[in-house]
Amino acid sequence: MGTILVTGLEILGVHGVLAEEQTRAQPFGVDLELEVDLTAAGASDALADTIDYGAVIDATVRVVQTERFQLLERLAARIASVCREDARVTRVTVTVRKLRPPVPASVEHVGVRLSV
Image 1 (cartoon, rainbow, N blue to C red):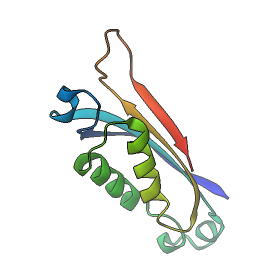
Image 2 (spheres, one colour):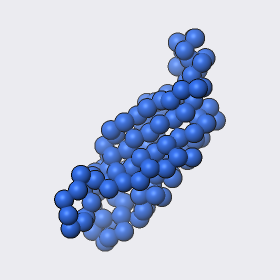
Image 3 (cartoon, rainbow, N blue to C red):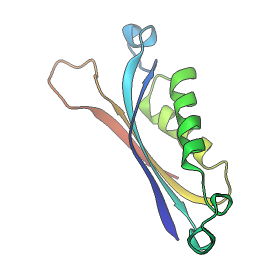
């Protein structure tokens, strides 16, 4: 087994509970950890024997940019379901961070991490 990592994606999307968050795009950070058997790819050096992280990134960007959710938990769950569409992914951990949360304090970000 092994893990394919995608870290530090920054994507604009419209997600949140507050009215202002439902009308204005804001930046989200996304990290992905896909657990996959990398044995065949390690031996063959063939993309067909692994997960194409470019395609995973494209699918994640599409979810964040085109779908709308109130909760980060729902956004993370949706991204996880897209990542698990390839049966070779045995487990995925998705971290979603709201990079400019509307809170009355200075914070780097707020976020959720979900593993399925």
